[in-house]
Image (cartoon, rainbow, N blue to C red; front, side, top):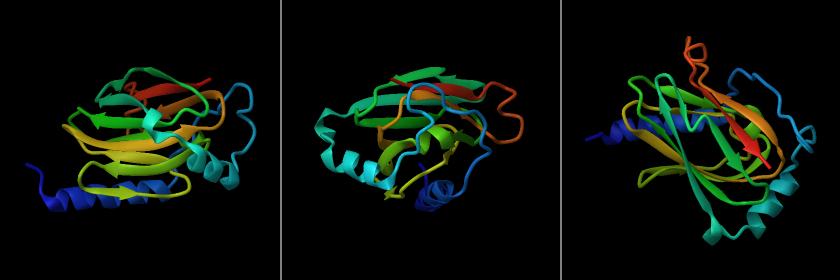
Length: 165
């Protein structure tokens, strides 16, 4: 059983990840991907969203990759993305271009805490079952890279792609 101290530490890392940029690699491609998302657009999307029609998706992080390797999403659709780390070490989900192109409602460690920020850039997920949920709405079509920027994890294949149509 995890201690409250560990959950508090996880939440603190989650909050810090929202304000610290990961190593930006890759550029979104596709129609509209070169257009910046404004805070007014984020606010309008969150205000008008029907969260009862939210789609649940999961990315499982392992020591040698993300599963699925590619996740397809739709512009304007509300999502809850669950990030689960089944690896033996902490891993990051670093996707600054993607996270900069969405309206984020909140990030939650279930039954523990939630964080709200205008834009996140990456999340650290602790090993052996650590998880968090990201509630968001994609606002720009494009192809976005997600990866773990720790040590040599990228060279080991801990990466994936998010395609927004």
